Length: 93
Image (cartoon, rainbow, N blue to C red; front, side):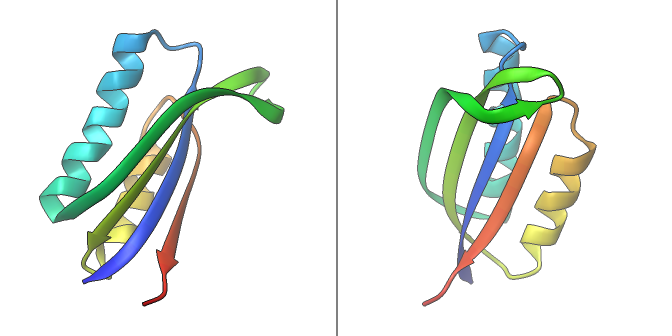
């Protein structure tokens, strides 16, 4: 098991329920394959426009999982509508 941090930016154009459902989907996926250590969420102004949007909802999740899981998580991020950007970083022991 290794420690990871993932950050995703979802569209601020989505209403609060849709954003919560989207983030909940990823939380469930991570919990099914590992354990969540901490979660930080918030709406912020973007440094530069992404898809003509000036704001986004940031979610940072620290989790522990099998080393093969981040590739699957990244794949799901890329095919999910509403996710503007994502990043997964491995923390060294």
